Length: 251
Image 1 (cartoon, one colour):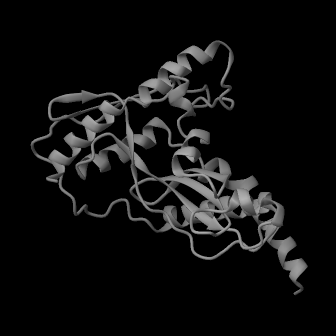
Image 2 (spheres, rainbow, N blue to C red):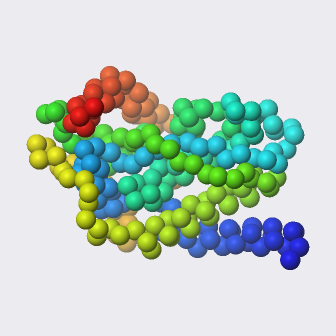
Image 3 (cartoon, rainbow, N blue to C red):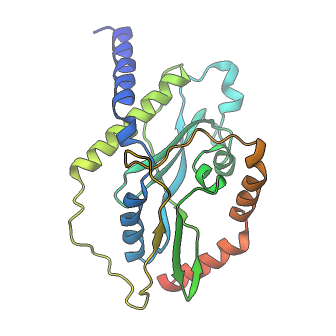
């Protein structure tokens, strides 16, 4: 089989996988799906943790010459950044791909839609208690996600399609192989009897979580969005929560 035929087959395969399975295998968890994630995290002494978030660089071996300055990362390689969120079972439920490699993790986070529901003030209200202090916002842990190998194609949109397809196929494998009924090796903290709670948002008539259009950062929503963004940026809340989490983890 010729190289061009292989490439065309790959592109068509990825397009078909995305079209057929993105809705089921690459989406945010509903409140009913989020509750087990929170319970699992709480059993591991991380109450309120939604998942692990991190960025990784996918080396772009055939980056066009005109773009190499923008896509050059601190290691001197040309790369495209993937931001992903995964649960305890390694199911990836958020993927944001395409930021140039010269950006850092905070720059990627500022461009990412991962907090759009929070900025709309429409995210699930998560309530939990640590050291007798009540918190009402979930959080992510920063963790490592790695991808081996280098991208050898020229078209950035094709690379994005390949990345999304790989994540969808990964989630299919997780669904097929992960044993959700296996006995846990982690024991809940007997001193913490306050379970994390979720206050669900309205559901559509078909029983699914209401879906919104992409966030528009202007108009009547701007004032409330700025308030929510400012609240997310309050460092003293994050620092206090880190201290509380370290105390219950024994570190």
